[in-house]
Every structure is written in C-alpha cells, then in structure tokens.
Length: 122
Image 1 (cartoon, rainbow, N blue to C red):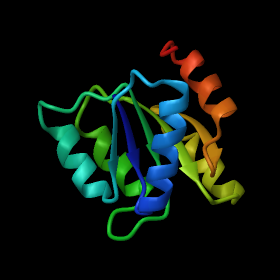
Image 2: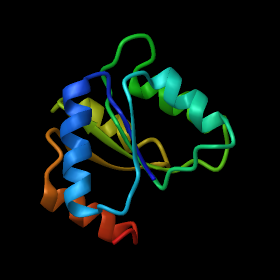
Image 3: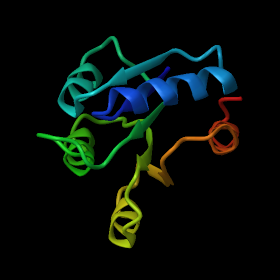
Image 4: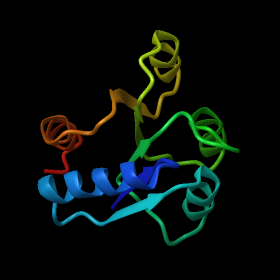
C-alpha cells in the first residue's frame, strides 16, 4: 500500500494513475488532509509501505506531519513530493531519518520506477 498525502485532489489523481502504471498491484490511498492520514497511520488498519508527502498544506503541513509521525513509532519511508524548489526545504528534508528523498512535482513514471526498485517494491 502507498499513501499519497497532498491537499490537491488533482495531484492525488495524477499520482494514483502514475502509480497504477508502474505498480498496478499496489493499493493507493490518497489523503487531502495530513491530519486524516496521521489518524489512519495511528490506527491498526493502515500499514503502507511508502508515503509520498507534500509540504505545503493547510492546517498541518508536511513538516508538522513528519514531527507528529515520529511519535507514532515504526515509521514508514517517506518521499517528499513538492512543487517547492527551495533549497531550504530540500536541506530540511534531509534532517528527517524517515525521509528518503525529495522529488519535485509532478511524479513521473521513470522516477517512480527508480524509487520502487530502490525500495524493493518492484
């Protein structure tokens, strides 16, 4: 299972389609609220293998999500998927052990394939 956390429904739809092209056997759960995704991860039902996380979201942004997610324990690997090209964001992402990389939107087939191969999911 792969989680997409982005407040933009269109981005979630596009990313879901890209994932289905590369890994049709993977279930995708898309959340437009970081709080809702965090609640799902706190429960017993959600065990994603990978999370793609946007930075700029209302209420709880990507950094807030990462800070709260660390408290849950046994975190899943996260890739930041953002429209930000700010070097400060890229450098900040490197301070989180669970963040495996920083990807500029849009998610493309070649990049996703590389990630899933790196993570042993293909």
